[in-house]
Length: 167
Image (cartoon, rainbow, N blue to C red):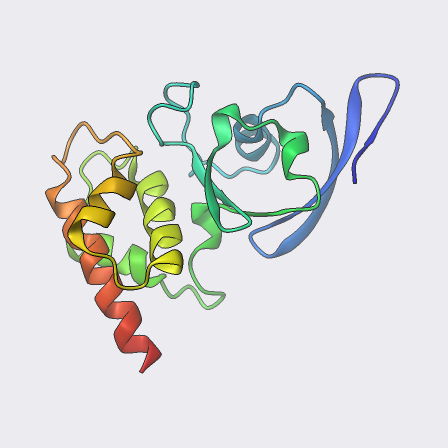
């Protein structure tokens, strides 16, 4: 676990996209700021800063979390996955990424990384979700461009792709 020093910093150890990381950070630092500013994970977007929009969604131990309202110390000893860590080591897109691209489930792209990570967590938990479940999960993110129809279709397509790959 992290050790707090007298100057208000702590030694933080966690796994980021499959790689063990250790660094010192302020106890008041958010995970979003740590990821974006210190780890160069720019796919973690910050818009509302209040756990409302979903743009900053990352996976912490496989569960979607708003990085803007998660303190960095809360991921000590845990696994964090960002959009940068979703593709395969060989650069192959994750089935969810591939489905979003194939269905053009984005316009400006600002919400896309959060939507993709949320969809990935959904499909890990419910490999064959019905449309209502997809809508329920995806509604945790705000997209002002697409109207959600293509995003929902992309999640359905990703589920199909993942089933086919498992055969």
